[in-house]
Each structure stands twice: as C-alpha cells, then as structure tokens.
Length: 232
Image (tube, rainbow, N blue to C red; front, side):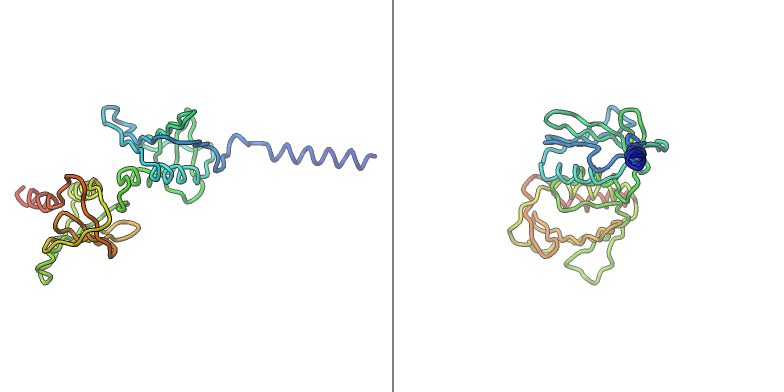
C-alpha cells in the first residue's frame, strides 16, 4: 500500500513539475490564428505612417504560418525600432510588435528561441503576391540587354535599391505573353538569393517564364531613378 501511495505521489510531483512555468513558454499554438481575414504591418514608431494591408489569402496564410512556427519564451528585453503586426481573424485580433528577434504582446516580451526570423513578415507583406521577396537586398546590377559587352551599372545606394525593389513589387504580373525587344536586365543580390529579371515591352522575364504587367507600373522608371541620382 505504501508503495502505491509513493508511486501516486511521485506521478503527481512529476506532473506538477511539467506544468510549472507553462505560462512562460509557448509553442506553435500561442497565436491561434483561426480564419484570418487581413494582416496589417505598421511602423510601431510612427503612427502617421499608413500600414501595409494584406488581404490576399495566400499571402496571409504564408505570414500566419511563419508566426505560428516561431517558438516563444517569456522574458528578455524589447529591442529598438521594429514594426507592428495586426492579424485580424474572424473572432479575434492579435496585435504584437516585432524587434530584435523578439516580440511584445499584451505588455509582455517574448524571445524567439528557434531559428524563425519574423523580420520576413515585412518582406512578405511588401511583396504581396509578387514572386519577388527581396530579403535584405544589398546590390543591384543593371545591364543593357542590347549591349551585352557594356559594363553593368552597379547600384549600392540603399535608398535607390529600396525604390527599385518597391517599384518591381508594385507591378501586377500575369503569366504569359512574349518578351519584347531590347530592354534591360537586373541582377538583384539579396541575403537569401539573387534574382535575375529581364525587363522589356511592358513585361518581365524571370526564371525562364514571361509575365505581362497588368497594371500601370512602368519599369523603365528604374532607369529614371538611376538618372536622377546621376544628376545629383
């Protein structure tokens, strides 16, 4: 009988220890993003800056999967800067601020303890349904496709790089059509990969496939960005 009581007591102690600190660590279900309708990514330091609104369900799902894959542990200190993320679900809203590999949620800070980088939320939101993520672009090479022997224009100015990347991401693309004559090509070097894009005749060629631009974005404006910098 004493052995049975000792065994039961031991099991209870083990269960108590397992439950101890349960509210300190969170698993993949910390954010129960049930039926998300919209994601807003906003500047947490400037309330006047309009948020990036994401309504495309495929992009929302990608952001939510990234959030839920982050393992969080309560503690640590909030870093400077960062950005806010609001996930609007059918029954609830989740609003947190990401900075320096951690998040602030409901006045508590959580460190991210696995290798998930929530900074990628910003890149995904900026890209929308564009195939171009442009994660930490560091250099762009612009080459005249008609003069392949000419050296490329190398862009390392971060402001120019940002303008060019945002312009490309703002182009709505539809697979199909034929490449136009002439034009120019871009090599965009990012942290995770290098994108090589051909631009000609109101469309682009990327990864062996041609896309027509279906909105009013004109990628020849990239050359205007470069010319404007030359004049300064």
